[in-house]
Amino acid sequence: MSQIIKVIIPAFNEADSISHVIREIPSIVSEVIVVNNNSSDDTAKNAEAVGATVISENRKGYGYACLAGMDHIAKQSKKPSIIVFIDGDYSDYPEELTKIVQPILEKDVDFVVGARVKELREKDSMTPQQIFGNWLATFLMKLFFRATFTDLGPFRAIKYDQLLAMEMEDKTYGWTVEMQLKALRKKMTYTEVPVRYKKRIGISKVSGTVKGSIFAGIKILGWIFKYSIK
Image (cartoon, rainbow, N blue to C red; front, side, top):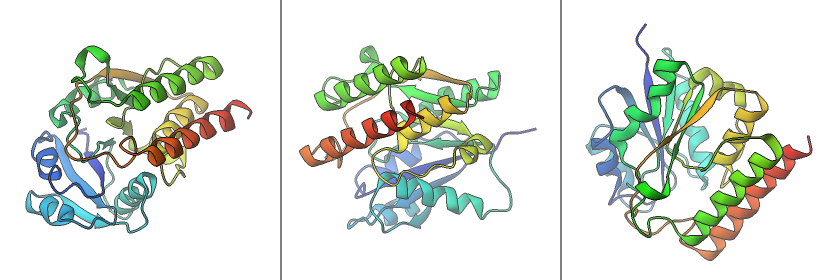
């Protein structure tokens, strides 16, 4: 049976980058869903121009956008086998989607994270606060849950039924770590795939600001400690 793969891209003011991302997504994907997260630029127009399905979520927040993409899929009669999440800023290499889904297709793994390993990262593509935050979060997951994650990378793939089983709820900065913690809690099989990473187009709405970095850190640590005491 052929696998149906769909991509969800949360996008807030990514007009300059979104078409690049969509064009480089491999043809094995049946639908690219761009969630226009209250953008004030031409993100939606540019995404539609290169063939993406564009839906709107006016409540700002990464999790809100991801949940809106999932809601769009839930209303479709034919459900996908695999969901891939990727950012709209062109910091990832969309063609590596085939690497991300490979463990699911070939080894029946439930969940795959694209790990932005140091040797494959472009210089200065991640801020010091991102690098430290990833280290701290994955260290705590290893400490509390014996996890083997090394990154909270947003480029990731998951079986659709397992994604539904997670009952995702975070609306903002904690989406990625919530997914990883729930994979651990539900004893799903998971792995990481090393991926390349480059400087994003435009300014990050999270790590590019002091406020964003602080709130993201608080949210991520909050999820980890919440699960560690359950």
